[in-house]
Image 1 (tube, one colour):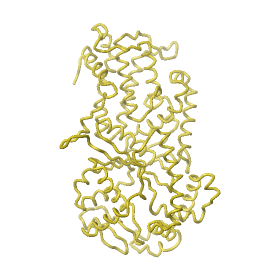
Image 2 (cartoon, helix red, strand yellow):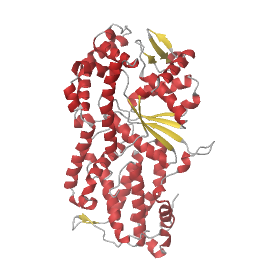
Image 3 (cartoon, one colour):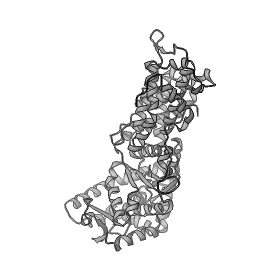
Image 4 (cartoon, helix red, strand yellow):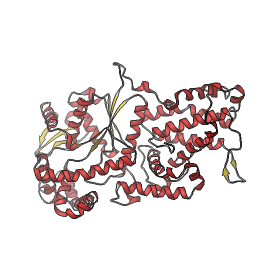
Length: 517
C-alpha cells in the first residue's frame, strides 16, 4: 500500500502514539482457535553439558532462544522457557573416569569448574583414539564389543552404569560435578539478563516414564533387540533415518531414550500447543528420529506440535578466546573491548554516559549473535561487535540515546492528533517521508521474523532505521561532527518520538537493555 507524503504522518504517528510498547505486536496470533485462551509454547534452549565446555553453539542457542521467547510472548503466546542441561549420560561417565585418574581435591576446592574442565579435557584426549577405533570397526561392520570392553571405554561405561543404578559413591561424585557447573551457568545467564522458568536436566527424567516409554516401544514393535542393545531400525518402518539406540548393550539409557521421556513428561505437565527445540544443526538427525518415533508411538497430535529450530554450529568463539575459556571470561573480554571502543569514540561516550558501558558490552554480544542468518556459519568477532558501526548493538544504543536527548526540550511530547496541517507539512520532504515508511513497516518486520524464526530480519531493519535517522540529521563538514541544523518543531518531535518508540520496541524484542533503563 502506497501513501502520499501528506497522508502517512496523519495516519501513522497517532497509531504508534496510541499503541506505544505494543506497536509491532500481534497478540491475536497467540489465541487458540478451537478453545478460549492463549496458546502455550514450551521452548528448550541453551542446554549445555556440565562435563565439557560451554561451546559457541550453546551461547548462540541461549541468545536465540531468549529472543524467540520474547518474540512469541509479543505475539500473545504463554511461553515456558526450559534449560535442559546435559547432566547425565556417558559423557558424565567419562568425566567420572577422568576424575578417578586426574581429580585433585585441592584444585577442586580452589576452582571447581576450572578443574572439572581440565579433567574432562585430559580424559577426552586420551579417549579419542579408542573412540576412533570403535568408529572404524563399526564403519567396516565389525563387532565393537572387544574394543569397548577395555580401557577408558570400559571405565566410562562402568561409571555410568553405577550412576544408572544410583550407586552411592557414583551419585556423590555426580552431585559434586553438577552443583558448581550449574551455578556457573546461572551466573552467566544473569549477566546476559536471560532467565528460565525451569532449569531441568537429563537426570531429572523419572525412571517411571523411562520404563513406560521403553515398554511402549517394545509392545508396539517399534524397537528390537540387536547384539544386546535395544534399537529402532527406521528402515524397517519405511524411513531413511538409520538406527536409533534406545538402550545400550550394557543396559544403560541413551540420549534418545531420555529425550522421549522428557517430552512425554512435558506434554503431560504443560499440555502445550507447540514445543520448540533451539539446538544446533549437528543434532538434526537426532530430532528427526525423535519426532518420527513419537509418530510411530501413535501420537500424531503430539508429533505435529514439535519443531526443531536449528542454526549453524560453526562459531569462532574458541579460536578468538582460546580453548577452555570460561563463560565469565568471555563476557569480561567483550566488556574490556567495549570500554576501549568507548574511549576511542568520546563523542559517542558523551551521548551515552559512563554507566552504560557494562550494559553495552552485553548488548554488543546479543546484537552480534542475532545479526547473522540462523543457518549461516558464524564469526565471533569481538572487535566488530563492540564497534559503533551501523547495525551494531552500540550503534543502536547511541541512536536511542540521541533521540532521547533531542526530545528533552519537548518533555511534554505532542500528541500527533493535535498537530496542525502546517506542522505536518514539514514532514513531507523525502528524508522524513522515507523514515515514516520505515516506521510503518515495523509490524510487517516482526511478523516476518516470527514466521521465519529469523531475528536477523529485525537487526537489519533496525540498521536501516538508524541509517535513515542519520540522513535526517545533517552532517556539518566544517565542524566535523553531526549536528541538527534545523528546528525540532512539534511534528518533527512527534516523528522522532515514534522512531524512539520503534527503536525501544525492537531493541527489547532482541533482548537488549536500554541505556536509560
